[in-house]
Amino acid sequence: MIGIVGGGIAGLAAAYRLQQHGHEVRVFEASDDLGGLAAVYETAGDPIEKFYHHLSASEGTIVDLAEDLGLGDRVKWRYKTDAFYVDGVVHPMEQLWEIAAYPHLSLYDKFRLGMLVLEIDVRSGWPDPDGFADIEDFEDVPVTEFLLEQTTENVYRNFWEPLLDAKFGSRKDDVSAAWLLGRVKFRGERDLLRGEQLGYFEGGFHLLIEALVEAVGRENVVTGARVTDLDLTGGEASALTAETDRGTESHDVDRVVVATMPTVLEALTGYECEIDFQGTVCSVWSMDESLTDVYWLNLVDDAPFGVFIEHTNFVPPERYGGEHLYYTASYVQDPGEDRWQMSDDEVEAHWQEGIADLFPDFDPDAVNWVQTARNPRTAPIYETGYLEQVVPYDLSASVAEGVYYAGMASRAQYPERSLNGGIEAGFAAADRAAGVVDEADDAPRAKKA
Ligand SMILES: Cc1cc2nc3c(=O)[nH]c(=O)nc-3n(C[C@H](O)[C@H](O)[C@H](O)COP(=O)(O)OP(=O)(O)OC[C@H]3O[C@@H](n4cnc5c(N)ncnc54)[C@H](O)[C@@H]3O)c2cc1C
Image 1 (cartoon, rainbow, N blue to C red):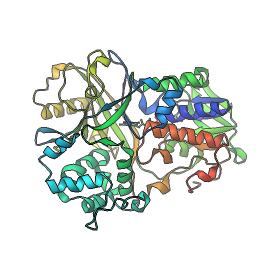
Image 2 (image 1 turned 90 degrees about the horizontal axis):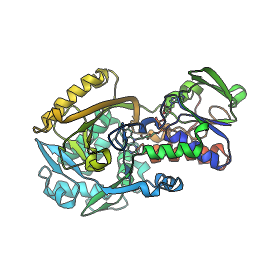
Image 3 (image 1 turned 120 degrees about the vertical axis):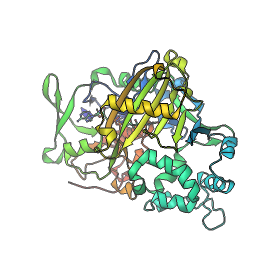
């Protein structure tokens, strides 16, 4: 039996793939719920993810998997609406004419911004469409320095900086330009007139998690089972220990795939990963009313949260029994930060004031319910030199024979961590564990603690 540590999308994808290769598997999930960061709340209709989720058009593996699992027709693509909130005004910024009308950037600013988004390097004074062809050349270039050189001070202050602040806060100066260029490619192609399409599972991403569990077999997936030890005696994985309600259990394994954050990998095997992670505090609000016409609101004005998302301007409220659903969220770089120290009730009260400041017509009585989720490790800081820190899928050389890794520190989760990346990481680890892909395909780094 191959043991899988973690019942998030990466662990379930690894289990599914290993079964397709003819192996017996068992997934051990510490919590009572499957799906990890894609876990959901109930609503009056479909469940809603505790942390906001959508697909980019470049993400094909998850769509293929949905097809395999009979869910192909549940993936819906819709044009998103993005806006910037500046000086108390919501400025839509999705369609070409909206960008042209945005008053906080000059025509020249928009030209420089447009060139960068189209991946055209104009530093020499002449447009070079191949200037960013090799992203790895920009691995050691800080993103802030790169953006000031590639665009203008005004574009940086009024466009990029609010986005970087929302995504990386005080760590933005550590992030690499390669990450940004990768991120530009990661987004799907834009229709010049209508903007960008994003994907969502009708019924929520939980459908995919459920379908994976069904395919793997519920009897092969154990919840409430925290793996606390791996037996690596003699340089090979032979057993794992799980703490459950029933007590401590030991299971013999031929191989093991650790599909968790790298901190868990380190606790189980001693393998040290130097990637820094940030946490997230995220509230879902159910209201009787709509506050904006846009899905994703970037906040240039000060606000107590980094982003404000009206989910039901992307997926219609009818899917949720008429509830209008919103996310307010902030990334947390340091557990000492106020937002991390506050209780959920305090966060919600503070953020409700923030919503009222942004939208003078907001009626607190229109709030049906609010729920807050938090997790200390939800996204890597994509620092300069990041790719050297990626954890290889096959850890035979650095930890012990038969130990594999699939998770947020995997190569497939760069330049953006996503469900698609989690599936690709799970598949990649499974293919190596099954011996169908050679370890030579992995990142070169191999390090023992
Ligand atoms: C705010 C936010 C926004 C996001 N937006 C998007 C988006 O728009 N689109 C998108 O595709 N993705 C998005 N993501 C990312 C996506 O959720 C993750 O990339 C993906 O869920 C990671 O899956 P995973 O299986 O690697 O890890 P996880 O989901 O973290 O799963 C790991 C699992 O391992 C379990 N575990 C941990 N330790 C043990 C142990 N010792 N024993 C047993 N089990 C253990 C955990 O309980 C957990 O269930 C977002 C995430 C966040 C937080």
